Length: 487
Image (cartoon, rainbow, N blue to C red; front, side):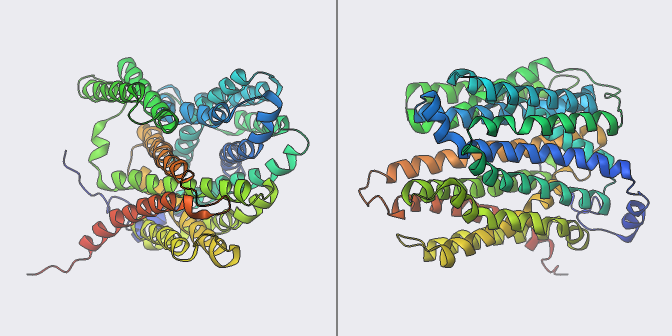
């Protein structure tokens, strides 16, 4: 498959003055702001929910009598539903109508949150988490496609994406703090708190989001949907369960084989059916491929590092959930404070340079940590500078990657493009986190001491390597573009 570069396709990558003039014609009316507010509220809820539940896990385990393995599935159940169904969610929105799919999925999210806060059975709680992940798999790409089709390509869309990313970072940061506070009143409040917010967003969405029509042409690729969804679900399940079961366990190996066969069947199907779920030609666009790989490096390294710091600060140093949240908060604050300005930077410099800046900041953050941590990293000298560099990298990278991943794509495929990049981020994060978890678990048996950070160093080495790959992935094409031509 030949990969071509479309970096000159639109204003996002190389913004001409004409594109600015065209985008400037779109007036930001109160209704337009209202639509953006609804989309941002849903992204805020996603981040809020994930971080609040993570803080509450020990309390959930104590009350419901769940083992550590069972507690993992409260998180992993969400990952299974979200990562496995994202692409299907995006394409369904294109085919059935974005508004309809968005509102139905948001209602399901609210109901699952309510049920999760009321159940007394661990298995049912895990099921509600899977259902919430499934709902998010439809709301996330649909919200992105509503945004990219509502706001004109160029400065207007870049500005909207910047605001959008602020709420994602704010939701996760707020969830860390709220989770610490609410858990002191009872873990159920971490499930019940999103319910009224989701209902308000649902009512506002019904009133503000304009009606749209399903795709005029095309059909439903049921075979493609079944093979892709089955393959993705099995792949994510294998990734999150293999560290505990063992990578060479027969069940793990069998799951890998079946997942590969299902995904291979999907590719074959997409090349033969009249109306494929995914137009594979989208993967011939170099900038879109790089955006999808870059989100793997961004999400995979960032979330895995934060996972390790959460374990170290709470389990090794004995910090309270609230103290731990405040320690990691500077990264989220930097994302929330810096993201509004990224849209203007995209207009001026284009997405390739900003993504390269993001990967550079991430790599420097992990490298600084490795160089200064030793066996007992000091917060002010090691952890705080690292979190600031990572926050800067995420602020530059998220909006830029999202803009590049959907740039130049027709409106009827915006759901596909946004679902594809978000799937890459979720599945990539699961893969990197699985590797980190296995390395950390192996390091815990080295006998280095309970308060020693040494067992986490292999995991930090892995996330650093992932960031370096992301840096090289974006550095090499940019250098080729500016290489002097010899006549």
